[in-house]
Image 1 (cartoon, rainbow, N blue to C red):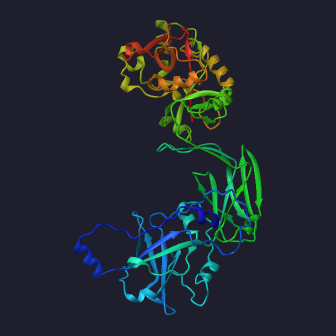
Image 2 (cartoon, helix red, strand yellow):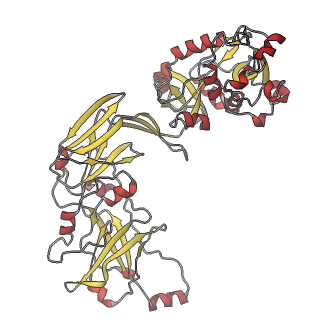
Image 3 (cartoon, rainbow, N blue to C red):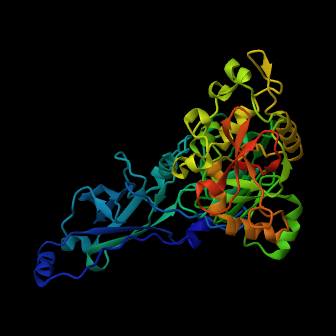
Length: 526
C-alpha cells in the first residue's frame, strides 16, 4: 500500500467544468458552493523504510460507485457545523457528492479540511493531537470478512492530513492508507481473457482454502480475479501469525506467515506459497492450441514456442463458448470447444440393417427411450439428407456421446441382439485411454452435425493451426473426401455422417451404416 500509493494511478475527481452561458456564470457567482476532490495517493507514510521486500507489482486502489467518505472543516480550533463529518458519496460520474450542499462563504478560506474513508456516522476527530484521526486509527478494526469488493473496500481505512480550500471553492483531499495489505498467492495456473464476457480459465486452483490468525478467528480475504491472488487488509505491525490452509489435488497443506508484523501502515507485502499464481493474459481465439495438461498456447505463438509445445498439443480451439448442457454438467466449461489434432478411421458396429422381425421387436426406434437428443432421426421424420433443416441442428454431441457410452455391447431387445456399437465402444475406450482429458475439461466426445458445421465455418483458422504443427488436416478438401462420424442417429443401425463439402444438406450430410468405416475426430470443451 505504501508501495502502491506511490505508483498507482491517482484517482482524482475534479470539479466538472463545462462551457456555460453568461446567465449560468452569473448564477454560479451568486450561489457558489464547496466541492470536494478525493484522490488516493498522498506523500507516503512517515514511519520509515519498508521492511518487507516486494516484487514491485502495482497494487491499485480505485473508488467505486456508492463509496462513502466523511469530511471535516476546522476553523479557529473548532469544527464548522456544516462540515462536521459531512458524508460524501461517489457517483457514476466520478464525482463526490455531499449529503448536503455547503454554500461558500469567506470563512472557509482559512479553514482546514480533513477527510477519511470509509464513512461512519460515529467518527469524530481529536483536534488536540497532531494526527486528528489518531483515535479513529487506533480503534479501527478491519472486518474479518473481506470476501466481496464492498467489504474489502470498507476495511481499507484511509485518511488525509490538513488540506486547504483551493481554486473555484474546491478542496483537494489526497488520502493515505492507514492499514497494511497482505497479498497471498497460492498454487494457481489461470488464463485471464481479454474477450468480453469470457470468464478466466482456472487450470490449477487450491481447494478448501482457509485463513485464520494464530490468536484465533477465521478471516475471509478478497480474491482478485485479475491477479488470482487473495488480498487481506490487516492492522499494521500486527503481532500475530497468519495461517493459510488449503488442499491441492487432494493433498492438505498448511503455511504460517509470521512476517505480517513487519508490514507498516500504508505498505503491502506479497507472499507466495507453493509456487504462487501463474496468470496468462491473452485473447482467446479460434485456432489457439490446447495441450494435454490443459494449458493453452496462442495461435500467434512464435515458432520457438510452438516447437517446445508441439509434443503436448492435442487439439485446436474450433469455436468460442460451449453449450448449456456442457455448462450444466461442468460449470467451469464455458470457454471454448476444441477439436482433436488426431483422427482415425473405423466403423461403429457390425450390423448393416435390421430385419422386419427385429424392428417389430423394438429395434426400429430403440434409441428413443435411451436418452438421445433426437433432433434429426427417422423417429423425428428425417430420413434423407436433403430433409435436414440446417437451421434446426443442435450442438448436442456431448450429450449424445455420453448416452452412447451407456449402451452395452450386445444390447438385446425383444430377444434380438443387433451390433450397432461394438467397434465404437472399442475405438472410444482406446482413444480415451491414450488421450487423458484434464480434470478441468469435459471428456472427449463425438461432434454432432451442428458442431461439424461450426468447425467448417471456422475451418480456415483451424486448418492454419493444424498446418503449423503438421497435424492431419480435415479430409474434405482433398481428392478423396471422407465422411466424419457424428453422434447423431438416423435409424436403428444408421448414423449421420458429415462430408464438409458444399453448402446444401444433400451434399453436406450422408447416411452411414454402422458397419461402414468413417473418420473419427473427437472434441472436448473447457
